[in-house]
Structure formats: C-alpha cells, structure tokens
Image (cartoon, rainbow, N blue to C red; front, top):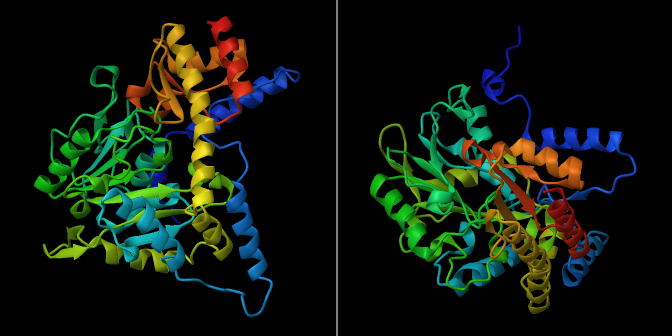
Length: 406
C-alpha cells in the first residue's frame, strides 16, 4: 500500500486564501449585482512598466532567431541580471555581496518555502506571529513540527508581534537555529530600524543561528534611514539569507522572477560538526530541482535597473503608496489603531473584534474584501489587513463604504 507524507495531515484544513475565496464566492452568488472592491490578497493591478515590457518583447524576439535563440540558461541566472542586481541593490547600499552569491528564481515565495530543504529535520525554527503562512506550512510539511494545537504548531518558536511591542517580533528567549523575518512586514506592514535588525543579527552570531530574511516589499521603503537589505547590518553576511522579488516593485506577479542572496560566509554544521557553506548546498539544490528563469523574463527584470526602469518602478510603488496613505488616514480617522501604509503597501488594523467577524462585516456591509488577521497566526486575532493594490478611485470608495458600515 502506498503511504502518504503524514505531515501534510497536520496542516490546518484549508489555506487562508482559499477560505477567503469561498466566502467571497458565496457573497457574489447571493449578491450578483454587487460591486466588490478587493483589498485582500496582495496581487498588483497595474501593468508592467513600459521599459520592462519593451525589454520583455525584445527577449521574446530573440527567441525567434537561430543566432539569438537561447535554450537552457545558467541555473543561477544570467550574468547580465546578477551583475546589475549586485551593483544596484547591494554595492550602492554598502553591502559587500558578489554576483555569484545571487540565485535568480521564479519567486520569493518558492525560495522562502524551499530553503528549509537544505537544513536538517531537527533544526529549531522561530517564526514571527503574525506570519506569512508559507514559512510555517513548509516546515510542517517537512516534519519539523507537532500537531496544531490552539492555532499554533508544537515545536515551533513563535515571536509575538503585538501593539505592545510596535509589531516588531520579540527576540527568541530559547535557543533556535533558523529565524524567519520579513520587512517591510507581510502581513503587518511594520518596518524595522537598523538598530532593531542588529538585535537579531547579534543573536544569530552569538547563537550560531541563520536568519531567513524576506525583503519582497523593499521597494516601498521611503524613509532613507531604514535598511533596505539586512546586509547593511554589520556581520549579517555571516548569518543571513535574503529573499527579493520583482513581483510587487515591477508588477511581476504573473511574470515570475525573484532572487535569493546567500553569502559564502554563511555556514552551518554537518552531523559531525564540520562547518559547511550553505551557498554550495543551495546551489546544488537549485541546479538539481530548477532549470532557470526564462531568458525573456530575465531581460525584463534587468530593465528594472536601467535609469528609465528605476524611475518607472519608483512611480509604480508611489502609485500604491498613495493608496496606502489614504487607507491609513481614513482608518485613523475612524479611531482604529493601525501600522503600515507608510513604507509598505499593507495596513494592519486593530479592529478590536474577532477578525473573521470583521472580515464578514466588511464583506457583507461594505462590499470590501480584506484579509482576516487570524489567518496569519494567533497574534493576528482582532486585526485585518488591507492591501493598497488597487486604483485610487476604488480605494477611496472602499474607505467611504467602510466608514458607513462601521
């Protein structure tokens, strides 16, 4: 008899966004003429920037000629993209990262979920709460947790992010091996200062831990005093792996391109206590299980770093940040506490009521789709997340509807 991986049975009955989709579908069936405004899932709404689209077309055209056609590319990514990433995203910020420490992929979600494969089954995992579900679920699938009890998996260490600590996760109070962090944060929209990140880097260096740092929303940071990479913190290149994405900054959610940065200084031990470069392990995993991001997509991604591309993607994130500021202002006027919306496209609202109850209220009374905080963890209860990924007119209408419903 064929046996399944029983760890999958530990997962909660359904994925957060499937629950949301079902409730939205039920509402639309019952209210076929209602205009829904979706501020829930963080999918972009605006088209690709013009210079990016032009490069994308050029890359596709090259595939039509025998002399310019490309088949399998280098698994780690084409040099033309890795070189410009290092120059623009790292060297310009004072981070000593090299091009061969960059791995181009088809999504930060994939990489942040797959990275756990190269670590042993008994590593101790710390995750923020609330948390992007992928960090948790992939470790559940790998067998690193016990069952889910009272909305938390046994065996995981939860770092609480609450109004009391400004939604910055608590430091671990027990030994851990891997620490997931995300700034600007998904789902809360909170941002970390250099001083705050230094606490985690110092902890990792002192305790031989590794930080898995998700920086997918870095393009929304407008405060220049805030770190745009964890490698701006001294010593982070010894203890941190960083995930970046083109999805939100350049509209690549449907195009798929991202990269993971693993400095060669980052090391972990084998079963005999020998220190091993994590870079080489991920390189082997990456080349074994992935055939590389397509050439036209990488050409399009490289166009993001041209002067024209930089101006266009900055304008694109400004477009969404305008929406975010409006949401934050209106929520504050209604008297609710919130975080995010200034250096992030997400606004995390303390509704002071059951989060699914708040979701149903906004859906049924205002025709607005949000994301219930409980879906992101125990500390998400009482909150909802609103996303700025829509047009300004819809966001303005949504906030008027919410004000009337509440």
